[in-house]
Image (tube, rainbow, N blue to C red):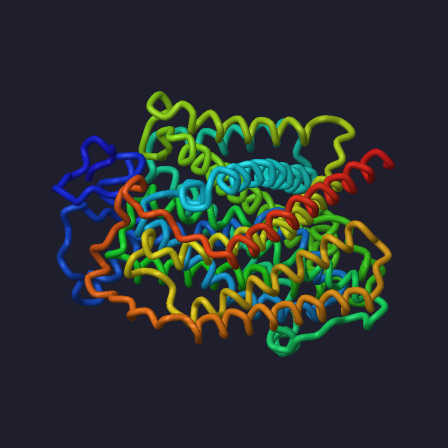
Length: 548
């Protein structure tokens, strides 16, 4: 069994856009190996299962990694403050999760190039720099929230704060520094298994299954118009923590590093569905168990942090339940730190042309590992600084993620319609229609979030006005697009034959995208909104920090 990129079996292949030659070779998954020259069709259940076991990982890790420290806090707040009334948001997010992550796994398998590099090459230096800078800053802040989760879990378990943070940082760094993709993935998969602690914990608290099932499929805005702004902000937080921008960058690059090609697309989609099932079950369990633990108590509607959730669960179901919750939080925080740090290191390596693969040792990819370790070290240090505004940092992460999410989805949609990039793998009309609606909803939520941060006393009427205004703008935009397609020359249907063997050619050989007037106007408006919203939100956060 091969374990080093230099020993992988090699066969002649057409020149592709792959930027790091360590991304070409045998698939060395945590649960199996597929040799590069193994092109035989998978026949029979046993062969297909072995292939799935070798492929599984990217979809599972990115999804379970999303149930991180921030997710524990967000879902815990939803359950403690509003019971199970917001469970329906998770149901509605299932197709959003699949469509978004399916597009990035398709981009990764077909192009062999990371998300940030594709944005740079296809949309220019401004958007390329913007995507890397905002990813770097947002991931750095997100990483701080992971270490906040580690301190909360360690504090509940009675462990010393400094030692816990230092040890966790050492584990996170050492796990990636092995020079073996397989060893890293096995550690990450073990943490994914650890997330299943929520299952026995759920049964220990035993929320009402019929009530949860009803709330899962029945939209409801609890509290009436008087609490609309608070509920909307929490819904936006749920969306932001469940569909986070780092996920897009992580999965695309991880698929590339695992050496998955279009030939295994259906297996990677199955891996993604497994991950979605695990993350939705985990999120539902978190919301349900905190709802049950605080129902009828003085703590209902008074969420503080995840340590408070652990205490409420312990009061309801015993000390063991609180310990299991704290261990699950610790597990989730470490896995989230893995994924967030790695997504940043991949993006930096991709854009600056550095070697960026877990198949390489530290000496062979110094810049890649330096970015990874540097982010972890800085985040751990910030958490240990006395007086750091940790609560404000957590709030800032959720706010900025909500503001920036629409831009990530817009670029994803544009890239998946770029025929030079995806060829026979470009989006079909149904995927485009659904994703366009999702982008419209995300833009609306982003505007509401920005307005709410700038004007904390925003009224329900103003929020309803924003929703109505964005809805009208969306209808007008859809009408313009439909009319334009009706008057344009009908294009030939996409030829998807032979797509299992199609890979994107080298980037320098691609034809430059045609930039229409509508595209320029739309991207200009997006650029202006993002810059203004980010500046205003950052200023507001700084003012709040100085005021405190």
